[in-house]
Length: 273
Image 1 (tube, rainbow, N blue to C red):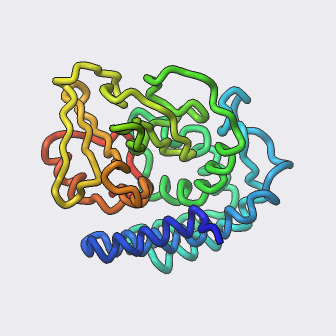
Image 2 (image 1 turned 30 degrees about the vertical axis):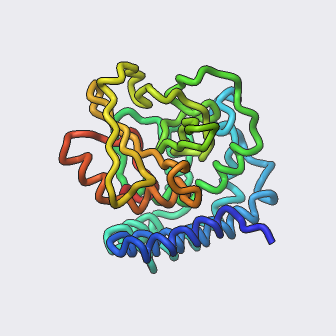
């Protein structure tokens, strides 16, 4: 029986929680969220249709959103967060729950239109999670139904939704690896040049240092000394069992290291680790 992507993510999170105890609480919470996302994703075929598009159709993924059918599942999501999240996030979920459906719709429409695209990180991080964690399965399914337009391997944003990358991926090819970027919003992957900053487009190799910690041999910190941003890239040539979405969550020490050296993430992952 084929393992679903959500089951695979939960299994990887369980494995990494044992390997990296310092990330155990984060990864256990992620498993709860992933289980909910799996259940919601199974319902998405029946959630299609009847909704009004949000944004112009050329934005592909962002042209689809059916809040009328998604909304009934949101209280369950908020309850799950209140039960299993760290206290600050649990309190935020309780506050959002008290606002009711009209406020939820406003939050969702704003996130759907701009999530993963903002230059300034002025949005409330907790509310961002409460939108992103809930809508992510819908965005992933929407992306899978779209055909990405042909474009160069130097695009800094997702060709399907115009969001910025949350991580990089090196997939085995020949004697090396081919580089891809992973969209922070819809999970789409697009091919990207090896020697190029995924934030500003810097292409001078001397400005693009790469760091690897012994603790995480499957993860590269690809930094840029021009714009001072960094991208964590999951190297599947080092560990073919790694899962970019999950392994990235566990790499908390690499974020601390980058902060200490003045590098900023291009786009945070779901749990801001």
